[in-house]
Length: 257
Image: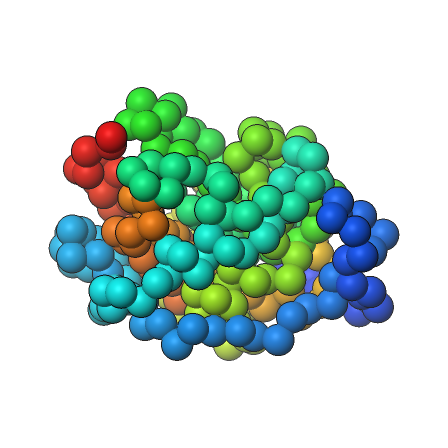
């Protein structure tokens, strides 16, 4: 009998009142924010020429020096999947010399993001040995994040929710129907059938955000040393993830204080 992967379906539209308290409440989902951008152009890191050579969808440039992307992103508040409490991104790693991989998934109900989360979990020991903090962020509420964490499973302490897509907007990550369903970069998903099958053994569509437009958000991968951005890659389409070897080569190449 052939095995099929879970299909993405769009949940019904729901009215989403704004968050009124500091702790995220699942019954009070925030209104999707206006798409705020800094006008930054994402470039490949000058430290990672191999990334550009091996992946045609790697952006061709990196934020201009002095663009302040580290400072700007640091001021964004996201929610801990473990506690539901808000936390500023700058508080998640040492802003002077600390190394961090910030992986922005699509939404918590995306099967391809379950696959990416499993890949990151499997690589966590390598990140830890290099002194690199892993931070995985997804679109949705903390309760949706916990569904992924419990069923995949994925360590809660490294998982965060961005229900208003603030980090995604600031970084200018792709959004829309064309990028989500019809981008040629998504074809590579078919070459990863086995890994998708493994990652979605306990998949449930219940992890999908109640905010209907959120399922059209694409993700990206970023590596920081302190506030300095070393590597930036936007997903061109669904399942077009950054090559993990490229990310690891940056983490292992740069000395950690």
